[in-house]
Image 1: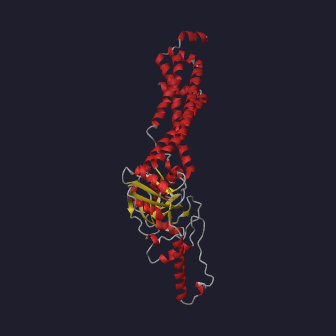
Image 2: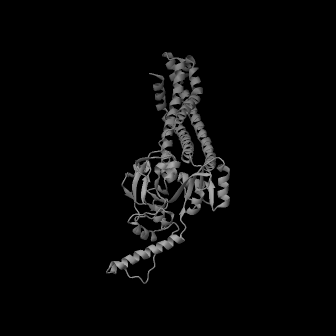
Image 3: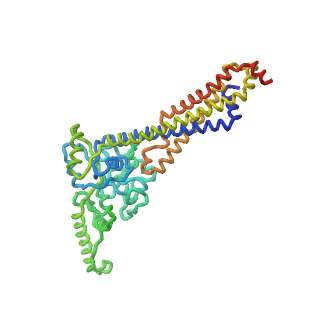
Length: 455
């Protein structure tokens, strides 16, 4: 019988103490696994999703919140900015590329973003199938959206107001899917892209003055619906016509035509009095001199704020690092307790089986074999604990991601990192160190003395 089989038999004889050692090692490994996955994947996601974006411009408020909402899509926006002011910024010589973003709706948790073709350019993305949206209420979806929702080109869906699934459903404005993005491994896989004017129309604003309205034969219907659409502020536009007869009672088409003209006039007044707004702009610098000048100019001379993704991401990760370091210390304390538990277990079991070891020596077992059996016991207990801990760690990450909603999309629970192999090595080392003293005791066992004491 080999060393590991003998060690396993001894472990089965001391189940209670072995289980305690396994549980302690598992808890310590699980915490270390969670921390490793969180820090590694968060760092990768923060870097990947902000790559190519030098500056984010949005409403004044928390710069970290602006970055989280506009790049990582895990927080609410700080507010809206005037589209006209944002357009003036696009013409600045320090700006190479400016990508407008209009947020406000979602589909089953996937954010619907009003933008244009520059969004694909700044993220260096391409279409897997279909074509980019050209008209209002056409949409391009990310690869994860297509896979998780079972959508394909030509399918229709409707968005819900706000950034949660419980918002008011805009059933009067369905989107049709015209394209699916190539998988990129970034948060863009979970987004839905459409025109900015689609977002305006859904929320009661008309983009005709900006040159982005729908020019098809159904535009009159879209304008009429837009008057009654629910806006971000919670106000609802309405048409008051006390002297107008009900169109359903007209006997010819003249009254109906007059009503359409009236609605269009009202729509023109609404568009004229309503400032068109977007949520944010993603900026790419045209030259290095913009790093020091453009953010200061925006923050001091406009009603907008500029936030650097690199600086805010580093600040965010440094804040998270404090908590990660504290939990990492706790994990090492638990691993030390696991090692101490294994040591006590093996030391006590050695006292109870000295006679067995002496008999094994008389039957021809070498000192080295006795040493190896005890070492194998310690390694098996802590290694099993480390393996159980890795499984628990990934399951915990899955649960955390499910509870975190959009924030959970930054972390993949079942993505295995190469560094996790070190946790198994740590389990082996801890088991070896915990068993070394009891193993030396077994190695130095005196056959004659042990048998005489038993007699």
